Image 1 (spheres, one colour):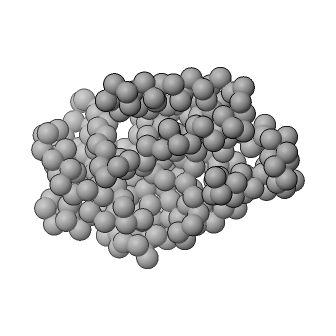
Image 2 (cartoon, helix red, strand yellow):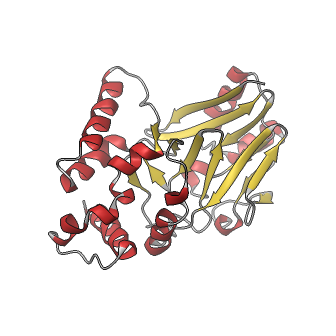
Length: 253
């Protein structure tokens, strides 16, 4: 059975995804229903479900139209039901089975209360929790301390070989911030050059790995950034406080 992960950009920097194991498939965050349905036609599959990493409207706003077109349920964590209404609540679930498609679920509150990471094979779909070179903000129903605990706990425990597939391409904005904190971080510099080369060639940036993010992404490196944060007058009494201070610094940049 062939496994495929397909990614499509919509709006300026959003991504939607199609996961397929043979004929069994799922659409993830189809915020643009036209592009989502076109992707299904191109792939020659009819998804069994729509799955959301979180509830924000730029990711979930196309679900009603896609659901009506395909006649499939919308799945997501019930803590985000204020933004959309999932037909099936994934709260407390560690795995989702859609025919042959098996997706591991990791609850990572912080960007929103119901944010999820979707782990499928060697891929990790991170929604707006973990970006290439950064993390999601907490301005719209989020909690920076909860996000810190998700990074320091759940995400820290995951396999570094996983490929990171985020809900937005913010790499070109995030990595200069990382380099301002750590000018000598060659992993961040190489990743920025890779992203810039892809853009110059008119192509999509390749996925990073979680290990690569741990080398380049400041939100996965808070324990190495004490001096950089202290030089900016930020409280760094422990990793959680350092993460929250870093998120606040990024919000102001």
